[in-house]
Image (cartoon, rainbow, N blue to C red; front, side, top):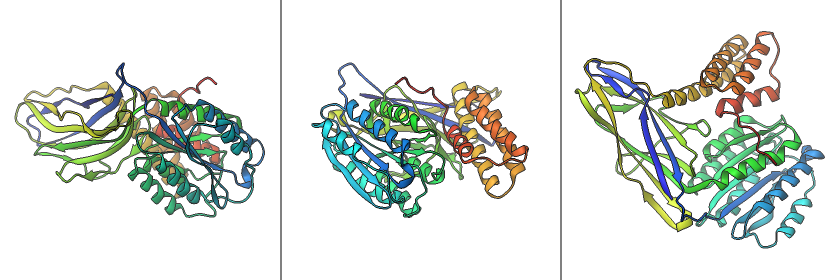
Length: 418
């Protein structure tokens, strides 16, 4: 398994006469499968809400979705299941798949009762997942339909950060319309997973299947983007780094002992790009082809039992010209629009929370136009519908708010066939 690492500037030319220039540096990273590569085992943990509000079709569909996942796991793959209401319990301890029928029986015994304590479920889930993380692709699905009424949301975020430090990926699934999108998004972002919205019970099977298909494409784990900027080049001070594909996430920066910046990427999928966007400022540079940064990826290859592998250190160049003419990169422009769509939607939500409905509607309209520029018609429709509703004096339903959040983070995909 190799790593594809492709840096590009939104505008490859710089004006030699300009004292300061701003550029967006896009870095696309993915795993490249080779014919002799074997797949690493999957280590999956399901953290399932079975509180009283999940009664009926909701829990029945989740149980169906979970049992179908058991059928998709292969010999050598690992599974653990944690169930929570206002307490949490380990339903299936971390184990290799040897008796799938027994595991399915355990799932089908679940009944709906009690309140909701997401943090306790998350704590036990991380403990179980960590037991099988060596040389595996380790991911969790956390599903809930409610607020963390018996728990502490800050504790949830701390557990998500702990999971990231263990190289575990957390995916969150909000079921119905009464879950807290801020909490689930923060957990997924910290765990470098994805946030999903299951609006109707019968969508659970498709959504579990879609996420599982995504795990199956993971080739490398524990990846970090390492980069250094040359003299006269600096990062923007506010929100300098974000991921824009496959989901949009604001990313934290850390500094390595050697002074380089490091950005955690987590799992790398085969032939599916993880795109990072860095906002940089460049001082005046002499004419010619000038190196402005160096980029490298550190990663683990669980199928080969190898850790802390490094790609070659790749220089990034800009063309500094006396007679400036823009040399725009259309792919990087798309990434810039994806980040703008996300941030405009966030601003709209902030304005709505402040009671500024007019400001929120205006920002949602702006985000809809940005989505259209990207060719993301699904997001444009959702965002414009919400804007129109606010302009007409209506309120956004919980469903509208959740759809808005989801389309701000990603380009909607068609549901995979069953």
